[in-house]
Amino acid sequence: MNKVKNLIIAAHPDDEILGCGGTIAKYNKTQEYYVLILTGGAENRYDKSMESVLHSHALKANSKVGTKEVFFEQLPNQGLDNIPLTAVIQVIEKYIEIVRPVNLFIHSSQDLNKDHRIVYEAGITASRPFAGQIVRKLYSYFVASSTEWNRIENSFIPNTYIDIKDCIDKKIEAMKCYESECRPYPHPRSPEAISIYAEFWGISVGMEYIEPFQLIQDISGHI
Figure 1 (spheres, one colour):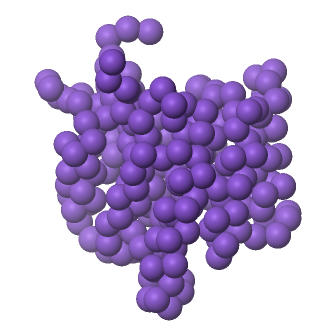
Figure 2: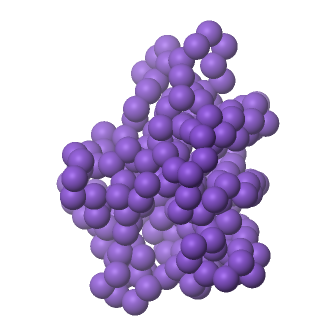
């Protein structure tokens, strides 16, 4: 029996773990998870040489949670608004064809980070429900230190909750692989804060540790 395929689109290295690391760890035995990281993550933040380090961290982090494969593109970090939106859409469409995922995970439209919002817009377009669309379910995910910092638009309001009680430790260990991106508590990307966020979302639905998602579109034809 073929496993369900999932494709997670991340603007930057570490977004995929912060948003979906627990879910990957929970379901990697029965489903396949692929990650596409659109930018190198170093431009406008670090020296160019840091890009290879972040790639190495991404591979190590994703191996911790059981991602099947990580793809890297070279779109401009913190500069997706400087290229045509169609360029981002075409990259996502290319990997939808390569992976052929049933489920697609993208950034939230409510994120403070502009790269994240552009990935949302491009992902929505790439998975639009035309005849023959491969993607059946589209989700957006929560990225600590971005989604909660948007004070302008509506807040992220999840409607899908994945119980990661048995996987929270794997998510935290995976995030620790991103040595340059982790911060000391009380920063949202600290190990303690990642756990607290999972508890916060869990409390809201009567569970202990949760990874939250917004189901944006479902054209699977069933519930």
